Length: 452
Image (cartoon, rainbow, N blue to C red; front, top):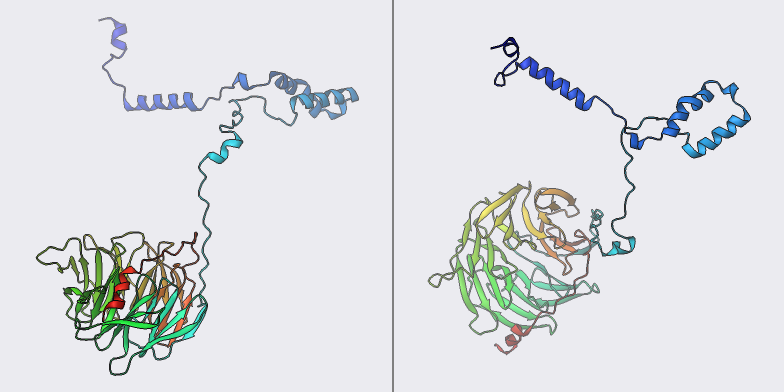
């Protein structure tokens, strides 16, 4: 082996860490610390002038003459004397190119404009007297029909308030022996209305003809405090714990009976699809009944029995933009709003509101939920969904806000409270596009006139 090969490291021999570090630093300086001028981006005529004549004029201004001043002015026009740099290290950025001609820009998808923040009035826009309204958490005495007529039960009398012209009419008055009125619910056609009574009967009225069509009897044994429609099926819930589906087109109107609650049924809501029914009771239970999965052996078996609430469940609201999402509210011993996946029965979220939850309404134009409350603030609270951040709190009622109803266009909310006032709130703003009122077929109710 010769000396040269002995002194030089072999290929397999590795460098020590210090050598590696020094090598990396040297490579780093070579790659990043040297600034190499770019000749293609330099103006050599301007550079020569600035290094010779241009600097002389600035250093000795007295040596300038009229001829030199004229010459420098001419150079300034050619070379742009405001420049100070002689060396250029990179090319100038290229001139922007219009990829799409201006006349074709209208065919490109436009970005969505930022929606301005909606103003939410903090006070009601209208207040009406509601004397003799019952201060009863378990009843449902207010509803707003698709024909823009509001119905409210005050004691034994049902009044109709036409939101179009502001007129009020008295539809019916029940005698003390059978009253008071314990629930009201408009049919989908906005003409017929169901009225639940304290004597366990349910009356059906034609509000245009101003006459009673029939009375549903024999199903319940106690007052009917909750009602809801599913096309021609009227579902009734009562203090006896029973839920009954009534086909109003036939004489033998009772077609199904749901048994699960063992105390008063105070909340009833069908989903938009008409397949699932949510029921809440004074037994702190929430049931989901599903018509599509009911077996032939047990057609009225519940789909989910939910026990998370610790007080009466009256407030129920199906989400308008997600068919299997249900919001429910608990009474004074619970004070929570809960959200449910009604396909699985899972509780998605629970929010402690700090006060009794009397009713719930979804905003049909935005992802928002409105709740009305009892003790202790008697307010309406607007929530952003799903974050459940408070957007606004509407105050004005001096007693618990027991009932809420939403106008057909989804913008205005009416609230009735134990302080015997009916207030109107422009809480949901104005819809972006006015939706034409759908003409509901009233044919299912035509047979009522022939039933005695």
